[in-house]
Image (cartoon, rainbow, N blue to C red; front, side):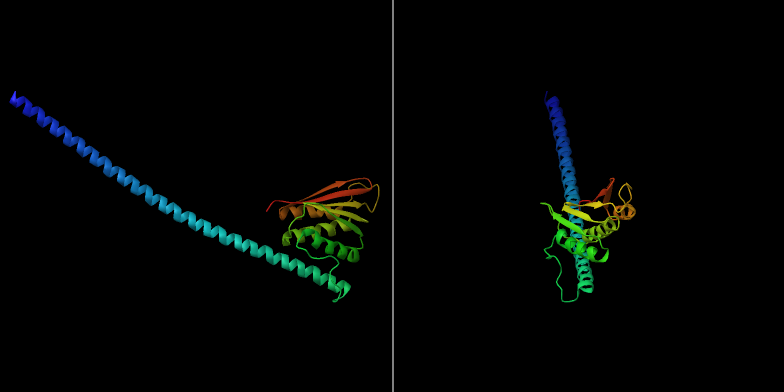
Length: 209
């Protein structure tokens, strides 16, 4: 009996020792996995921080580029108007930081240079002034002016032109606007021309920034 109890005790001790050893290994393994996860988290946080800094730098550069193009477009408009009207004549429209104010000046230049008269209507939704949009819309309006005897222009998110055809009855005659389509697409914009019997409708749409 005593021998049996001693043997049983030995077995229990060995078993308990084995369980303790297994639990110890499991704890060490768990601690190692936790340490690996913490290192991975730290590395990922570092990469995210680097990516955030790079994104912020790109956004600052983009804003700088946009601002530079805007300034260049304003200088162009002021120079062309000064050459046309004289250095002491103010711009024909107040510059208020919207696309409408820039294109109001552009339409006056078109009236004097191309000879196409126009009326301008500003919708409730006005696009903020960006150099790209000024440049693209200016070329769009000049192309439309070359295809029309007179124009009605609406700025309401996009730029819409209704132009009377210089040759009534010749539907679809808008060679300058048709040529503008590919150029606009290269710049991320879209020109849609809807011909009519005596007039056409042309729309310039900008893709979202």
